[in-house]
Image 1 (spheres, rainbow, N blue to C red):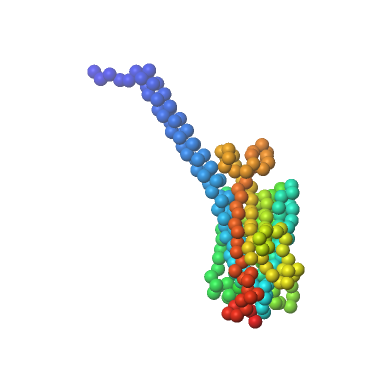
Image 2: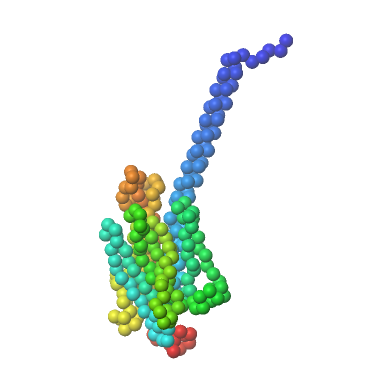
Length: 257
């Protein structure tokens, strides 16, 4: 006669299955937490790098200080919330500029950049030369700031064109720019006060806030928000301005008389 399982044996088997299930759930939860932390760690780096790349493209295509299409340069030193740097840049560039849009998915760390080809850009706007302005803009709600790129197209129109705002980076803590003047960095630059000269190099420091607990020493402690540690990621880049010496290179330049 075949012998069946006793009640105790069935209970022990169920207990073992329960323990294994709990262990598996704990392992999966640990994996999901690690994935969320990895995404949170990568998002600010990606966003800051994308913003610096846009700035680099504009600066490298800056118009020279002399010639028919000479472009001025203004760099103003400013202070934003809690005394942190909030500078302002204004210059003309031949980059044409990508159309930058932050989708609804930006809240979870996705940055969308839509760049048109030169042919499509020419068909849409007719010219690659634009005036760009960079600065921090406070949001209508909360205390956060966004780095905004205002683009003015076709500056030769009889009526003043309205700049198009493009959000380059969200949740910015500070935006600091310095300009090389010979052997030292200075905080302000106005080409109209410097015989039309533009700086040979620009140093950009961009700090983006990150609300995500991290291991000690991995980020910069700034403040507390709703009991969560508010940290930040800082990106820094020194950009050379190829057209800064164009005053002495009038021959062979397509923008110079």
